[in-house]
Picture 1 (spheres, rainbow, N blue to C red):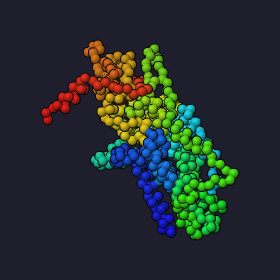
Picture 2 (cartoon, one colour):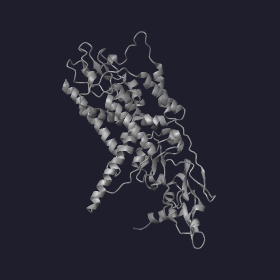
Picture 3 (cartoon, rainbow, N blue to C red):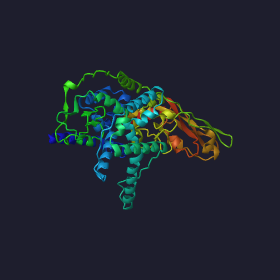
Picture 4 (spheres, rainbow, N blue to C red):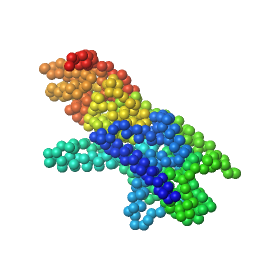
Length: 515
């Protein structure tokens, strides 16, 4: 019997480590060692599946829960596995052998948190949802804490190998966002502390996914079941339960909190606890004096529907007046990533998991601070301080698990206008210093910026907003500081960009070339 218990736990741990390791490495992998096909693991996360409207994946996850209980929490959810790892380490390095104990369910807190999240959705405030959504919280921890460490190690190896004339490694810029790092480090320490001390406290008191799946798991076919006849209330099973859901004195298990980790199996000397089906108990009779809590069911249904409708809060820009009295324009509308359709669509779907930010090779995608308003804090926006959006890159649209950034082909991206080029003529170096420049024109892939005659043999940028796709090549390369002479103004709704006639002719010539 113990071999059977050991096999169940081995299978669970093996699958959990596999899911966790692959998904974690996919976040930090900047050299594309892993195929982009592995992003499918991100799509099997519960809340992202709701956001994208993937009913097939939702059906699979709910069916798994109805069959086996909350195995999603113990195998598929990376934040859940992360807590298990911390709890395991705390047991290994502790001076005394760590024992858990039963605690009463904090149902008021659990359902209140879910209530708050539903209200946040109704009243257009996505920030709280994004902070507490487990997959996204894990993504930010990896992107803003562990990936910089990974890149730092790469840069050390690059320096060592380069000194010996070996160029296997190349230096990577380490991205830093103070607001997102602060939230990530706070999340890490709070969840880490709870896991270190008491195991799965976050999962069973705060996590909205845990609350929803916990409700469903009460009706699962396979459960950890106690034989009240064989049980002698020794408490060995409860001492192993990191969800604190086994009440050995009353010989009951709180199935809404059990995550099927199988740690309790095999420790019972009386063989009074097992993982087994009980069809007769699948629909349990309602005890006298009690009624089914219809409100909780309403919470679930309401939560699933309102998760699709989180509208945007708009960010406000301003006009800058220099000491010289010159008025220059700055960006008023932030740029949402290619494939996000519009700022409103992004704010409805995005949970700020930062997978797109982590996989952006040119480091153009950055966590928003107040660009989208408070509700859109931490969601990806395009900034051109460290690079520009590569003309042929569609990485972010390939990996997004929420449907916030829809898949794009390269051809489709070439015609997607995320923003339009704007020119502050008075502060351009050609006007201010009468120096030749033209860097913006050289870096424009669509001919939206061209150099035209100015005076004294100089040329000056001339813009055609219809051709611009908002890649930011011109803004990134512009030497004017602190405000750029040329910049991209975001489109609230992405538009169709025109293709330059010269580009069409060039394509025909290349395609028809004889060899």
